[in-house]
Length: 201
Image (cartoon, rainbow, N blue to C red; front, side, top):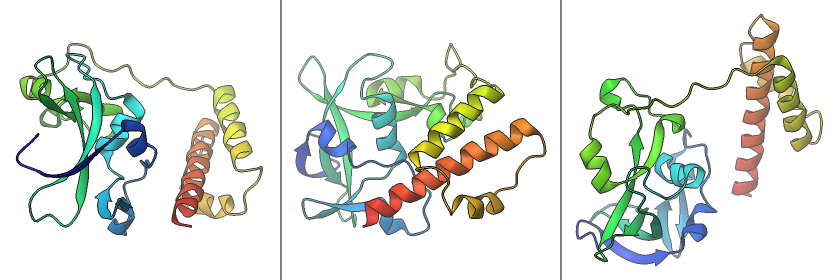
């Protein structure tokens, strides 16, 4: 157990990650918290999103997270869910989110530049550059973008009255491919809005 934290119970991985949502950029910081067995826990965080989207295994040594512990620093107003693996000696090893390209080398603080890594390997890596950079995002063709638009619109159940308002909020690029990309972003934003409304209801 990490003695720097006060601990209050452990939880199965799926029981925690089922509550994790992607949007952490909210004005009302209370929306980042949820009641978890009577305690306020910061459940919407980039760290937890990394574990949900990219797995719970250290990309370097392969040790895998086994459970979450509800913990906080003494005197903190809310709790965190910290993920732990267990090494061959039976000791707990905290799992962290690592910047693939380090911040000190210009790496972005964004999901595409995060990976799950145990605290031991993260400490050894420090600010060293990766041997292999992540692949650049695939440039989508018009047909691929249109298919994604059709898929997202089907999720929304066809035309959504609020999409036109979202289009006004976003500057649409002049080129046709730019317009398609903008439409994809708008639809994804609307789906997130609907998801947040359902979560709050």
